[in-house]
Length: 115
Image (tube, rainbow, N blue to C red; front, side, top):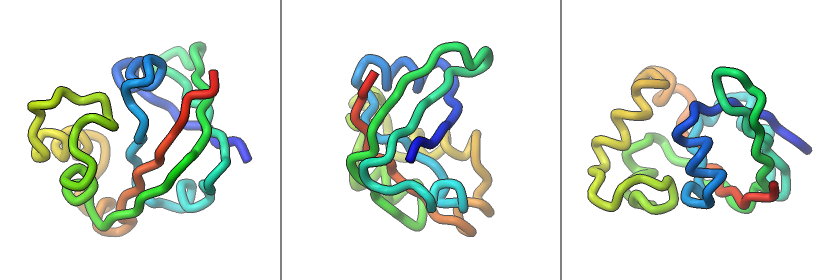
């Protein structure tokens, strides 16, 4: 199955360069459909003209962003080595609410670049 997701330029480029190998999302109804071996096509915001195709090679589910980042650190997200867990969490809270994090939990989608 092929899924589609939108990304801002910074994480889009990190995936394109192979620096970001885990995409983080809420574990909402759309993400519950993702299975190992599925493909995800990412579209770069705002124009949606550039795309990257990836394959799902792993899924990691957690109750909150903090636990996910504590376990995986910074490297799989293409973040600087000295970035603190709290900084990573704060970035996610700019996109998602604390209420949604608690309601859905979070998903680390391990990806491999296809094209």
